Length: 495
Image (cartoon, rainbow, N blue to C red; front, side, top):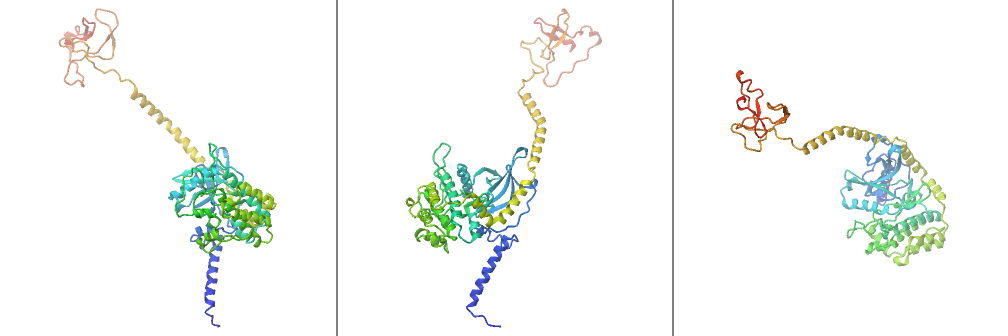
């Protein structure tokens, strides 16, 4: 056996390391789990390839987790800070709608800054309504966790498409995609609050991973998670960078206020990457990438891809000027210049181009969504039945409580015994009692007779009547008389 040279050993080691990394990535993409969790967050923050993915067999709707009135489906996207699910809005009488539901990763639930970012994204995106912006529908708080409900768009991110194609995108397709993005940015830049005051929204993270190309051939800008606007509750801490570094504008590193021109620089970097088929400011480290953005001259994309028109070069280079004042004034101005430089492709042409690249992956994802949509929306019916049963059982309890309240507020009855107003006769004490109709001796009139009892040291115990001799029966029949004041009293000898 031939002896290996010492120079071939390092090269062989590099080849083995590269092959092992490829196996881990390929295994995770095919769903066998090899190397999945260790590098998942790192890989998902990058633009993963648009490859076929195993269709996840989802649970029936009746066993799905509910978030407010939304049923969660499988995960369709995962990044460094958040996870996105496909879900179903469950309304009354069988109404349902497919949505995308975003929440923070479980390891970031307690991060107040990330939670505020998510809520700021909802507040800002809710003020932007445009066909080229992924809309925010609702915000749900369940068990202390915030969930962001968004429009579901069937398609792929531009980052995945670029990773899959490995070649420059045709200029007409690239122009159509970026024109849609610029229209969405123009809507965000021009958004106003409820009082009509400008919000001055700056997206701050226009990048390939935040551009979603729908199967309908329409591109949309997504993820306002690091956007800034008037009234935003989150402030970037000193020394931190928010956004994807290789698409950020120079002023984002230098500090100071940001304007819409910062988003136009990022849009120019996205356009350059689509036309050239590679990253504009790629480097081995973040520090070198920042240096390239601040100092390195920008090469026209036509020097990399010969089919790029010169007029399109001019649009790209103007958007990438390092001085904000030298760029386009608005996103609308840049979109108009782009359309003059090259005729954008139609949405049908973009849809066909996307289908050729990512048709298999989108078809499998569509199967998952359609399976979710075919499930009967019976998730919330048991809760309704329990609520109705609880309401029925609560009716008697409410009646008892109401009766108790009435009894507490009712006037107290007259005491069983009450001393007469005047001083009683000697040996006789008169006590008030419920009136009894009797016939007095000398009169046939009906008189109300108060009951009388003898005095006692213990007023609470009634006095037992003395036995009456037989000879006194006539005198004690009746055992009472009417005094001079007209008050009926018992005879003392009959007590």
